[in-house]
Length: 196
Image 1 (tube, rainbow, N blue to C red):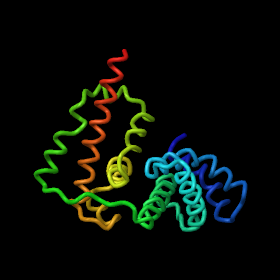
Image 2: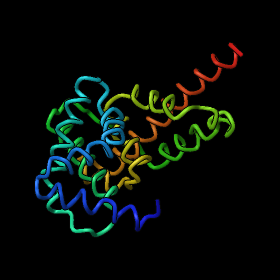
Image 3: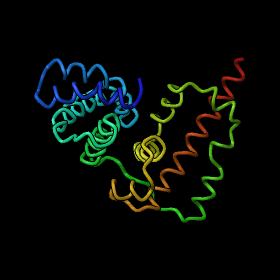
């Protein structure tokens, strides 16, 4: 389905949801639930908590859908509203503590020592769910910054503003997250190669 046709297909659902139509809400849920639940799980490790966050996040989108004005992709808008909701939820919990800032030099050293030093073929042999599992095992701070930077495409400047931390603190948590992730992947691949 092309971009234009997809947006046209959404129009009925959007207009129905704006009017509170139950059938339209059901169609919206069926279309977006798997993607949104996958996002919730990436940010919130505990399965029961992730389910609650997912459920409340969907209600938040349906509550705000009246504000969608057909500017830009609907899927992009849905994702942004949902991620904003999840981040606000995590901020309210106040259980996430971010690592201290690191110098620009240390940041570059961490990045040079990234998981890109793994063989490209080894990385591509990982299934998406395996990689997501490793991401979910990161500490909350590492997980949040890594997700926002890599998977949502935010800059460190935007993440800093979003989370109320400094840009260097965002860079620090991201670089440490990459290092942890690379270590986990290396360990897993060594184990897997031994079994083969």
